[in-house]
Image 1 (cartoon, rainbow, N blue to C red):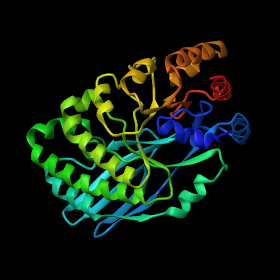
Image 2: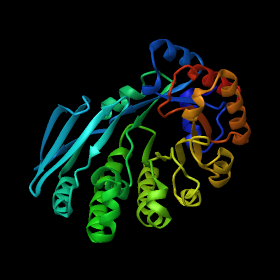
Image 3: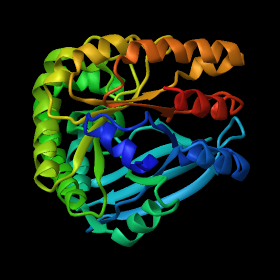
Image 4: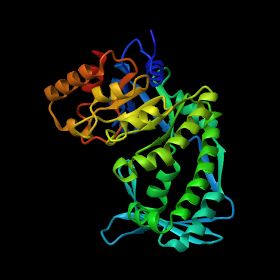
Amino acid sequence: MSTPRERILAVMAGEMPDHVPFNIWNEQIPDDATLHALLERQACVTIRSEAYTTDHDGVRVEKESFVGPDGAERYRLTHHTPAGPLTIIQRPMPKTIWTETHPFTSPRDYDALECLIASRRYTPNPERLRKDDALYPGQSIVRPYSLRAPLHSVINSLLGVEAFSVEWFDNRERIERLCALLREDTLKQVRILAAAPTAYFVIDGNTQFDIVGLDRYQRYYMPYIDEACDILHAAGKLAGAHMDGNNALAAHLIARTKLDFIESFTPPPDCDFPLAAARQAWPGKGIIINFSSALHHGNAEQIRQAMKELRRQAGDCRGVALGVIEDIPTNQHILLLAEETQKW
């Protein structure tokens, strides 16, 4: 009999486990009693962890906490680069961080952004990965924090959507220079991951296809994804993407990537791509389903009916897992989902 950990790895490889596994991120477990009950129900707990630490050569980092006019705590992170300072304002939120101000403020910041990217240095932390991986023997698996395609980092981490939309037309050559630097930097991280004591990595995700579009996805995302996959596959690792949004538009392009699995796939009513359509579009790729957050508002019978429909759409269940791997509005149905998954 396979362990829950082995079942998740089988799903990621697109294979048929001896039982459909239930997966949950450690941050989504509300208390020790729920954890114990989940382990009894053969759940696999994904432990999110750091594969390496990041430092900067020649760039001084200054962090300052402050309270905004709304009374909420924030912090100001300033990178003092040789080409000038870059400031980010972020607001801590439950289980996440909101970026309120991106480092890019005008075209005069491009040189500083290039300095910042070039300054990054990474120190592997294999001991932490081994410890987290073995936290619950046979029922835990470590997941290093996700990487992102270079253009994704430009849009979401450096410029913000509005500034990117303007700069794409006004200063596209500078955007492409940032992408080239980020590609080199990101693949450096992929090579560290390839040597890490873990079985799989998430090398892209959270793509907003209504912003990126198909042409940019093909030109700026897919080559990076496949190069990262090649590096990981050569090291015997699996590679996935965190696709928790609307995937219908680009499903045919996702199918052409070398990705082994799709993580946090979220079907309707939250997103626009049904499980049955994904199974048809992505043969051979594992799919780790995130049970739609909106459905957690339902009662127990509605949960059971939604699970029956997912089971119908899953077909033969090859390469399929189900779990709680996004934020949810209530914890009351976690154990029910684990129990219903055991019936698959």
